[in-house]
Amino acid sequence: MKEGWERTGGTTPLNLEQLNEIIHPAFTGKRIVAAERLGVGLSNSNYKIFLESKDNPYVLRIFNGSGDVLQKENAIAKWVHETVPVAEYIHMDTSCSILDKPWCVLEWKEGTLLRDVLKHGTTEDIAAAASSVGGVLAKIHKYKFSNAGFLDKDLCIHHPLPMSGEQFALIMEQILFQSPCCSWLGEELSRRLWSFCQANSLILSETRDKPVLVHSDFNGLNILMQQDRAGYSVSAVLDWEFAFSWRRHVDLANILRYEEDGSLFEKHFIRAYQEQGEELQENWKLISKLEDLVALCDMLSHCTESTPNRTRDLQQLIARTIQK
Image (tube, rainbow, N blue to C red; front, side):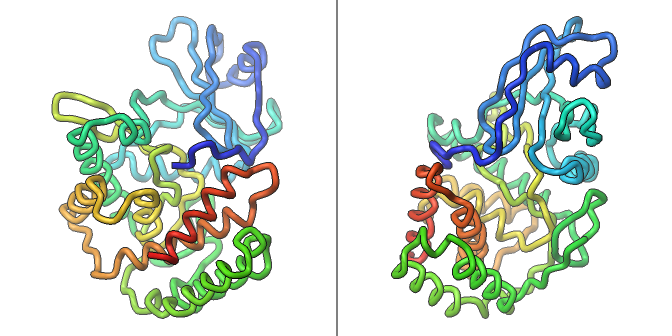
């Protein structure tokens, strides 16, 4: 699960004095007494901060993207918080006046990454976690849109996209033949991939799925789990920067990307997802794989010589998709 992937965004190493200068507008009169760099994010920078006279820590999140992305995340959190576990946004600053990047302070959520539960948990742990994750994703997908496309800071569609096979083929053709993706895949694998896309693109025009809120980075690095006597359950879904309006299959593909067909996690995840009333058509796996190819190839197109682990993993995932 993105093991050893290299960061693509620049890091923001900050000392205690700099951190205190940044958070001053959020906590007037309070100082950070300790800070810990959180090393999970692959693009943005996150710090766990401890303030004097405050029992609970907070998260300082520094964005490499625009302020609109931060505002979009905040808007989504406010929209879904009643049914989806998310961190509350305590303060945000998109002015870039204190720091040359947008930043925010978030509520600290206790938990263990789903990735680590899958790595080290028992079969009972994995089954419980999968059921909770499936139920939470179904709740996310209950938030609907009238059109598909990319969202602005107010959650309006600012760049509509048709959910059609023609659009899929157009995007894949551009990524494959007008970006470095083809060179990373090689001629033979690129040819097979393009044939696979052409042969199956019509399926995406035939599906009746309506556009829903998709997280678009829904995986074990962005899902926190908490454990009690009943087992593991989701304590927070993190990092909504890539969220947009599209088919639910984007998230299904992402969470199952590294799972074998029919795995313990997949069975319990899908059962819980459907028990929330979210119906899946018979060929949902193929649709999910097609959607995931767009993400995998787009990420590969942005690889460089300095990202060998990321490149190798993406090459293997794409090859495995075609083979299956």
